Length: 329
Ligand code: SD4
Figure 1 (cartoon, rainbow, N blue to C red):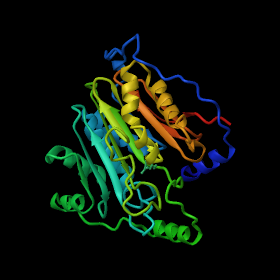
Figure 2: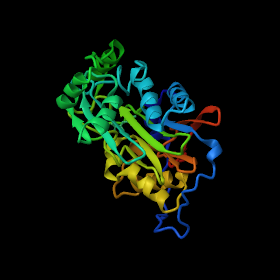
Figure 3: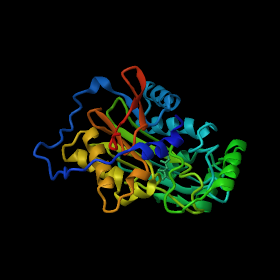
């Protein structure tokens, strides 16, 4: 099944189940920051089925590179892949036909950088890294971000491929588009890595929701929503309907739940339930998925609907793992 269609199908067949009040307070068994599974490092996980990207990231890690280099270069693989229509070059455009990119990156020291509404530059994640490392700011938007990329020597590129243009033209003919919820396309790449020193970094890059309103920015470049790293605890990255992730500050929430003693799996589940449990939540009609890793190298992933998956490269195995999900059929 094409990833971009799975949300609709899942929501047609899904039956809601009651959400218990399982939210925890402060844990009686605080999280231990020991690296007891050191043998399993380095590791990399990413949203969706992106084995080429995790292969690239693992190559960096195995050659002694940092988790930061690994997540940047792993994400760049997807940004350059014109077949991936939710990231970088070849991304589906907004309603006006403009491809606009959002990305962010965060390192082991809690530094971060992001770009929003970036046009004409394939490697948004690299510009986000430069914002983090070479400017006094955290976020650059639109024309300013684009000019900064040119100042760095990045080349102007047309990101709208023929096939994405064709898809947009088809969509324009058929669409009954409502601006509030768009569940048509979810393939954002979020990546988390731990290097051989046990240091964690993460990155997230996307062209956002297909056919979004012009100017719309989602969760992916928002630190704490699309991505959060705390090198003492772990990291989390989100995919899906960004508006819902932002409303619950999802990735920060997952990391804080891990701080309180939850495993990455439990923390992802809890954060999804926060979304589902909101008054008037329309969760049957949109998707959100989280992946997370803790300092010990344990991982987890969870989504509202079926068909979300995580790619994990650890101990020589690069595998796609179907994520557990809330809305059981
Ligand atoms: C957004 N979270 O812009 C992104 C979309 C996404 O796979 O995840 N696409 O809301």
